[in-house]
Image 1 (cartoon, rainbow, N blue to C red):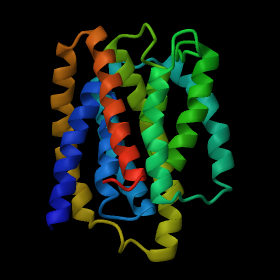
Image 2: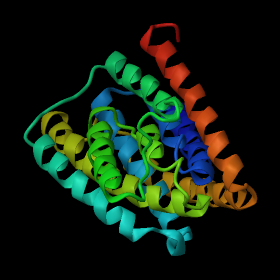
Image 3: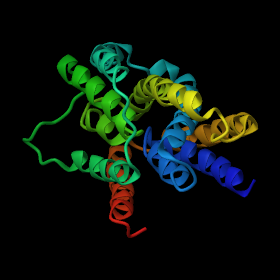
Amino acid sequence: MPIVVILLVAAMITACISGIFGMAGGMIFMAVITFFMGVSEAMVVHGAVQSVSNSYRCYLLRPDIRWDVLGFTLMGALPVIAVLFFISFVPEKRLLFLILGLLPFLLWLPRGFFQGDAEKPKHAVLCGVMVMALNITAGVAGPALDFFYVKTKLTRQEIVATKAVTMFGSHMVKIVYFGIPLIQSTGIGTLPPLWFFAAAIPCIMLGTYIGIQVLKRLSDINFKSYTKYLVTLIGLVYLARAAGWL
């Protein structure tokens, strides 16, 4: 029971963070749940919680979704899905932490180097490839996704809304990819009880709603700046865990 309460509180707080920045909450939630469960279980729980968070953000910001960008992103994601479903891959925790720790540094690539721009079709296709591959192997792809959005001319609402649709789809794929083998091998006994998922829904919706209200008060410039520093701080924590310091 104490662990479930911790997870519910974490789900609400991280949903609020994701509501503000369109990312980062998922990275923090993954850090929390990997303290209490194995990688496969964490992937399923993370996918379920983040699917609710992202779908509710999609609903609240539905007028701001850029479907043209999403179409090209899907073109990149589909081949990756087809390939990965023929491969069984569950990363070891230290490798998982290392990947998650290094991802935020994509946002610090110098100007003049490759700059991701999701509004460009070729970049959006590459975004789909990277996000789907990383979400399956590392469980989280927020910093890689943000690499293609933080330098665009999109408004903060368009960024959060469009990223929410992208991550909702990738999390659903993750649930199936890790969930089916897990249930076949160990059943559902290693996952939290079903009432946890039911209780998580209102917690996530409340956190998301609060986050969206904060988002409305930010400027586009502050939004992009705060996002960059926040995910970098989270990345440093993951690197410390990969090194065994935490």
